[in-house]
Length: 170
Image 1 (cartoon, rainbow, N blue to C red):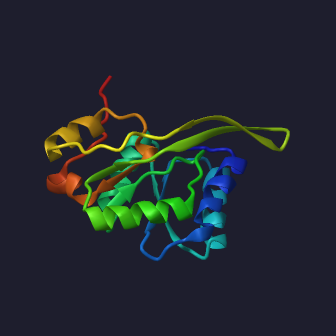
Image 2: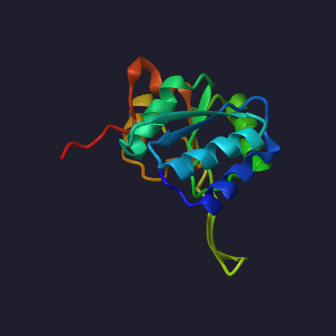
């Protein structure tokens, strides 16, 4: 929603190493004309590798649910508009998920900052390798997780119209 142009460009630069197994769905959560226009341009520049869909502004969780409903893949992952993805590493995760038939894979990340055109490392995180048991436990963990952008989910976790990201009523 109304992300700065430079963040959008960096996020879309992640798609340079596109893998045919990946479906990219960009959900515009009711951004203003400038942001929506920039998203259209970026999708065109990326040779329409992504599907751009729009909804009225209802928040990040609603946007994710919208993307989940139209996604067709065996696995789902989320990329926020201020994030970048390392495609070669992500391809390895897809290969690992396919071989292991994992329902959930958490992956590490690097936090960086950019000032005056120079990027600096702030921190890194590598999750421990572990297996979580039942699908119900996984759903419970995922429904409270705030770092969905660093997880690869099996489509099976979304069966029976399960929504991980319910909207809170105020």
